[in-house]
Image 1 (cartoon, one colour):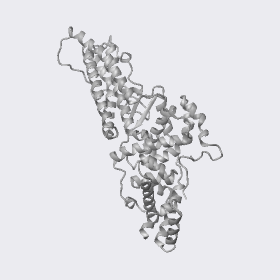
Image 2 (cartoon, rainbow over the protein chains, first blue to last red):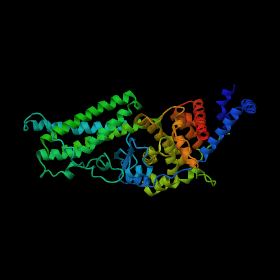
Image 3 (cartoon, chains in turn blue, brown):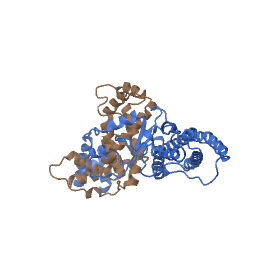
Image 4 (cartoon, chains in turn brown, yellow):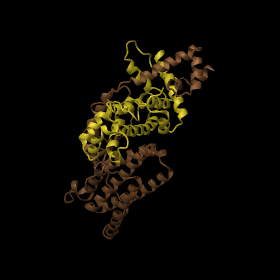
Length: 289
Length: 192
């Protein structure tokens, strides 16, 4: 009898019992010191909860948010292990252990749904990929076929975003605004052949880093997406990867081709954006229930 | 007797007879058009509550990043806010959703959310003269996962069991049971 009432003391405290039960419990409380003491303790806990103070958010937080907004970025902190012993202020000063800089917010308002992005990615991959394919065919008559080797930037090659400063610095996507047109940073007249390919790959690095990070996050959150979405996502990623591969092959054959460089950059950016939205969809699936 | 807070009364809002939904209206409209200064005012008005919600429902270490994520998400989604409720209510609900999603990740990555009844027994006893408020905060942080979520939402934030049930995807009865469980654990901690 006593245990039954003990488990219902919070209901009594919160006024969620009907009158008959309340009378019965009050009778019991007059006879049971243990339940009376427990009720008093529960009441103290509830009162303490209501009196909790609201600590101000860390002062360094708004500048971080403002900076992200100013850069037209959406930022999602990916929780990483942080030492519990570190003061919060130090954690703020250091910034999140791993912050993925997400892509353009497109004016800060519009965001594509996953299906829209899939369609956009495929449109980019298919339309521009077709042109790349045509380029490859055209070049086949002048370029000796052989194993495609693409120069890979060394690990120490600084990526465009690696030099980024500020609390949100981290693996990113060219400052979060999408990769700049390759022609803006690569001088075809100077950088030709392997040098140009090398430079183009250096520009890809931040995208690759972001893609790698996002794939890890997505793998962890995979069970938040329904199987049909995952299948569609994976098949479309495969198509985009094919387009990227074609662009790289075209670039290897014609390293000064601005169109191919831009196509490669755009396709990479689309891939990042698609992965971003997929991870966000997974992490916020609760919102849309 | 239960009290209502959370969804209907935001601290600092509606206390002088002005319906809470009108207090932020101008800044919300400006921010929705890209006015960062207006958004800064909204941040100033609501950041403490959101930060403390994140801190109490996850960990102090994770709360900073989560709060940042919540406000960036709010900035991005302001255009979808229709003004049918108070901005604070809308933001709070957005925050709860972001926090719950992040909790799942934290649970997997860090194994921080243990579901053991005696978890607070591992905490050192309160030293004499310690800040009771901070001590209580620390105890909340170490509550079992499910009990903590319900306790924070009900006793701290003022949600009702039916609302919590909807948010957490549990039954109202489970919400009541988890609340009682949390209170009993905290009572034991405070009286030891």
